[in-house]
Image (tube, rainbow, N blue to C red):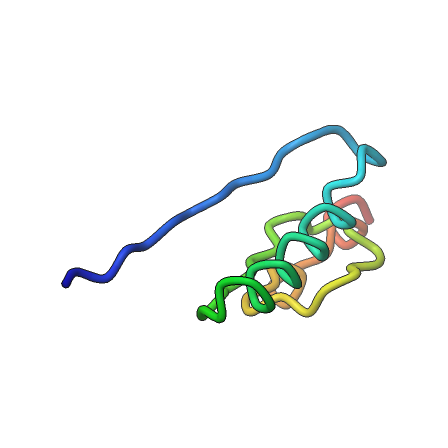
Length: 68
C-alpha cells in the first residue's frame, strides 16, 4: 500500500475567514481521519492564527518589517 499525500491550499482576501477555516479543517482531520497533519502559514501579515502552524513564514519575516 502506498502512502497518500494530500495538499490543500486555501486562498482568499484578508478577512475572508481563511484562518477560521484552516483551524476547523485541521481539527476535523485530526479527529476524523486520525492522520498526520502539517499546517503551513505563508501569510507574513497574519496577526493572529487560530491554529499552531508546523511552519510559519512569520519566523523569517513580518510584513510590517518590510514597510519600515
